[in-house]
Amino acid sequence: MRIMIVGAGSLGLLYAAKLAALCEHITVIARTREQAEELTARGIALIGADDEKQNGYNASITFNYYIEEAEFTGSLKPSYDYLFLMVKQPAITQKLVEYVKAQMNESTYLVSFQNGVGHEEMLKSAISPNRLLLAVTTEGARKEGMTAVAHTGAGTTYLGLLKQEEGIGLFSHILLVELLQKAGFQAEMSNNMDVRIWSKLIINAVINPLTAIMRVQNGELLHSTWSLSLMESLYQEARIVAEARAVQLPDTLWNTILDVCAATAKNHSSMLQDILHARPTEIDRINGSLLEMANSLNLKLPTHQTVYQIVKALG
Ligand SMILES: NC(=O)C1=CN([C@@H]2O[C@H](COP(=O)(O)OP(=O)(O)OC[C@H]3O[C@@H](n4cnc5c(N)ncnc54)[C@H](OP(=O)(O)O)[C@@H]3O)[C@@H](O)[C@H]2O)C=CC1
Ligand SMILES: CC(C)(CO)C(=O)C(=O)O
Image (cartoon, rainbow, N blue to C red; front, side, top):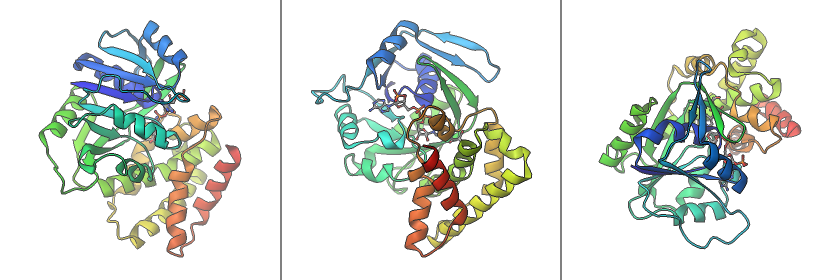
């Protein structure tokens, strides 16, 4: 299998390192030439759950970079089976979408891994919906320097088409799920991506802003009744929006949120990582999206409003 990964950050480096031995070829696109050169010289070092570091020079990975300012002049090698989009939501610009599209041929699938909502609308305006797979994952990953990544928690990755009736179980999707499983990820096809995306939206709307504001690892949230009660308020408020939009959330979602905190206990959530590195966060596409939906339904979400404002003030 041939895969292009756009984004050499936490998830991009983790998936590239884990998939390298199983793929014919992987191209990783970093944002800067500097990082692509470092990666070419050193490979990806993968730090496992036991803190053991595997230094990963792997001949099947090529590193390149996205030329941000220059006009895009052509595709690299448009023969990828899958293109994993592993950048944060604010990085998905029209220009990046054009670049990504130019790397695809008629049999390439784009798999987008973003947390939050909004990206699917932008992608579907450029990419045919039956070539667009959505992924939601609760894997925990933390980039450490330009060439290393720590796998800070095992999770589950769900993959599915935007519209459930279009091609669930297609052979190529099953192949991708099997590939991820062989690489050690827990992965499943889903014919209910709406609910998966909503569930993940709420997981992130609860965990990410609190860890970013408190500057703690995910597991720390479980150790104080104060943070647990804030989590519960965020959860209940988000559930009201989902119910008003007739989204059938699983009854077990609150327990899932607690389980994700425990399974990724050592992770710095992606929002905390953004705050620590003074990068734009995904708050607008996570709690901000919930606030927009609530506004249009005349609902008030006081806890989301407060954490939204604090994260905005921090960033
Ligand atoms: N980390 C995690 O544990 C999890 C993350 N997610 C989601 O996955 C997505 C990716 O997150 P994560 O990997 O943590 O994010 P990171 O910020 O670690 O990585 C994103 C990478 O994208 C790069 N990038 C930005 N713009 C471009 C561009 N135009 N071309 C090429 N590369 C670019 C960034 O480069 P640079 O650093 O040079 O700016 C960065 O290396 C997010 O939506 C996140 O919410 C979901 C589940 C878990
Ligand atoms: C699963 C979790 C909460 C892992 O930290 C995540 O999605 C993130 O950090 O954005």
